[in-house]
Image (cartoon, rainbow, N blue to C red; front, side):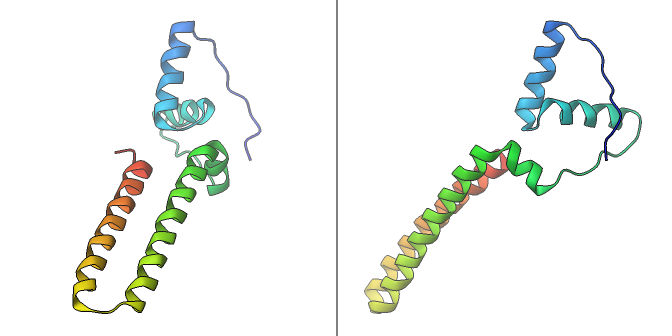
Length: 115
């Protein structure tokens, strides 16, 4: 449990630079500064819990969950269709549809990884 405070003053320009780096890293400013200071003195920072990550990135997590749900729904529709219509000509169409679904999953992966 963190019970001690460490504080210091910075200029507005220094604040803006650090805040920008923290935002680009996807973490709150205090976590960003803590990680930098602890890394500098050779102390490993405690890992953040999944709950803390979700809270800080709530909007991104909601968007990601919605995209995954849409892709999953599409895959279920394709699977139902493939089970209903099983001819060889239809198999080619199924492959095209699955390919499109895989591209959507790749977009989601890129979003999560920040590519």
